Image (cartoon, rainbow, N blue to C red; front, side, top):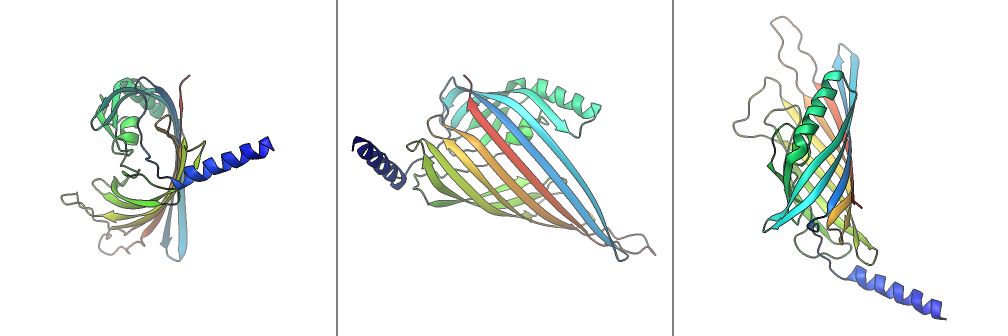
Amino acid sequence: MGGKKILLALACAAQVAHSQAVLLQIRPHIGDTLRMHLSQSVEMTGITHDRGRDSTSSMTTSIEVFSRAIAEQWTSSGTLMQTITDSVQMSPSSQASLDDLRRRALQSKQVWLRVSPDGAMEVVHESDPTSDLQEIFGGMPAMLARQPVKVGEKWTREMQIPLSGEPGAMGAVRATFRLDSLGRNGDVAYVSLHGTMSRISQAGAPTSPASYTTAGTLSGTIQIDRRLGWITDSRSSIIVRSTIASVPGRRGEPQRSPMQVRTKITQWIRAMRAR
């Protein structure tokens, strides 16, 4: 009989936790050290149609970054954190790329980030503006709702991200987030996201003789440890399809068909508190 009462109490507590609105914030405790592991792969496939035949080329690259983030100071605009790169691995790798990654890792020993409660990140001090951490965290937009949300509620974020391979080109992203469920008596929040991306023109961007059209979709999941004040698991997949119109050939040469490019970016970031 006592066991049934305990189960009933737990069920009621879980039901209450799911019906209450919760505030999702990124606010690590000052002094905490968080260990992070980033895995990212980029798959690119290009298809051209020439003289009745399709020609396909593909390339896949992957990178793994092991780092630490130390919460140093709380400010009115977020938490000031020092990040330390422990190791970087890249595939496929050449000696030149490995040497470059090691150099970047050494120079990333003093990278400072400001992380706002809604998840936006910006680099506030970095000795090497081309480092991997600058590329990963340099302009990460806000993701979380600024007001409390209940399980099942949604919120939308609009952001701009640079498009790789197109200097000055930006992509407009519109993502919808949903609080799917709460775990561990409300201490863990599970969020899903879905969105679309399109290419936008930037005033003053360098012009190219080739024209581009770009559209894409993104999806993912986020796991937030509310006691830790940090995202402990983030998985995302972005699929971008681009059409690159050919550059007009010389007089007398046939114009080549446009190239269809499919890019898939898969990213997984895990984090845990250092013991």
